[in-house]
Image (tube, rainbow, N blue to C red):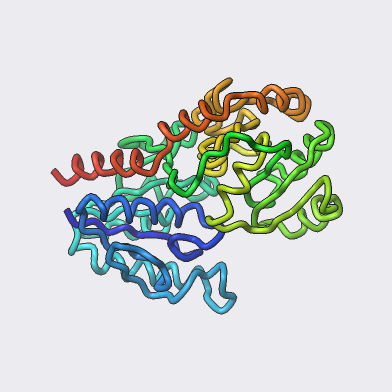
Length: 333
């Protein structure tokens, strides 16, 4: 089987720091290649993979101001689709843009929908010549048909289990009102615990007005954007991961990564969280700051070994790759 993985180009694949779509595309490329699938990864030219790498842009546009993402994404898609006749399947991880040109794809197209940025992009999906996979049941649009839901998997080998997490609360993710960074600070303050924040600043005004004034290096610590070599150490060092999201999050990789390290989660009951968090095993779902504060001590006492084992069973990259491979075989049979 010859498969083209059409990856995003906001960041390198795999990403050095942030880049969840690039991370999943990388894990899939490596896992399929290890299973003997002939994979060509269309990504930035500085990407690292055991698959065959092809692309047109030297690096991710989020890292380089001189690279216009709108222009280079279009060139990237055009380049990949020009080669589509060489493959049995094109697996799109680049959102709506390839769908606009899917009629020109010479192989069957499968699109993993990593999340909708808004209702305005749905026409590109509704008109597309593509099959669709959702990353959670909660993120499905009633206007589309899906062949499957495949929950994300992660590289569990890079997330070591830690049996003796500390007392800190951890917040891991982009700094943006949607992610509830300000809510996490309030929860930690009222719970009387130190908060460690990691993530890129996605909303600069929000950071400067609501978050930065509260970072004191003592009770509220900001470590910036953390790469894969540090993620497991930081996540495993906490008592609880806070995830007080204000939006219906399609998945939530940091939640899974934290649980794999043994650190359970207090998450707002929104989006995919009821699918991802096993209540009383890997964490608790809450509705608001008061419930989050009340849940912290209880969640911190959960068995970290059981938490990690459940997450490793449910969210390994191997499981994800096998589920995608089964879908591929149905499409190309």
